[in-house]
Length: 226
Ligand SMILES: Nc1ccn([C@@H]2O[C@H](COP(=O)(O)OP(=O)(O)OP(=O)(O)O)[C@@H](O)[C@H]2O)c(=O)n1
Ligand SMILES: C[C@](O)(CO)[C@H](O)COP(=O)(O)O
Image (cartoon, rainbow, N blue to C red; front, side, top):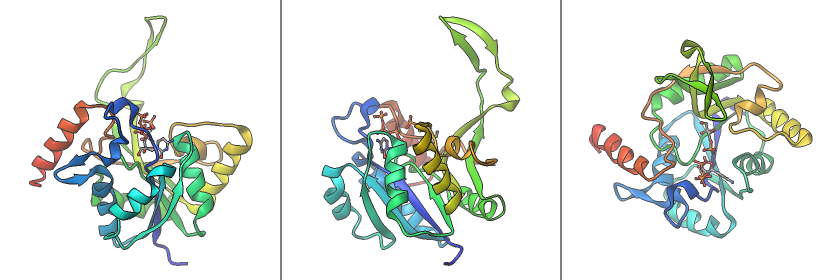
């Protein structure tokens, strides 16, 4: 085993909030699907050994054809009904490796700089996630009323990639499975067994979720001169 990392890219969602009548990761920005933009980042990273995907069963062949030019694509596994189940299916299907990054197919703008920071940190800390400082004031609401104003300097907005030692992530996923625990990100599973570190990422690393995000995506590419 080398100390390079493998990446799991969950791409088996429905993209319901995008209202596009198809899986949003197949929508194109600048003549390339969102998924291809995402895969390209990891194809370009010398520290990434292999790229594993979760896909909807009836999209596996579409994805295989779309990604023939990306030499690092390895396992494409059928996803599950939730993001967590999709990632668990892949985690169980791949060969053991030193480090695993998990990165949403729907976040095509992650930078090499963020990947480098995560790679450096995961080798020391075993568990690290990308995050940015919250810019807005965040309040906790119940029944349409403010319960409290949270301390903004303690709040971070969590993104992917999230990077882990392979065995730690597998243990955390096995425990979540045994406990019927469902989290909205990978770190929330790992937090139940270990400390999780953060590295500061950037605000361009958006998750393309709703229709207006397609305009932000075009703007980010334009800013990058693409
Ligand atoms: N059962 C699922 C659900 C989500 N994902 C993936 O997880 C990432 C983050 O999820 P999200 O942005 O919420 O995507 P969707 O679930 O597709 O969106 P929606 O909730 O609007 O349907 C996406 O790359 C998506 O394809 C997945 O692999 N399997
Ligand atoms: C993992 C994630 O992208 C971190 O921000 C996010 O939690 C995914 O959430 P979603 O409900 O699948 O959009």
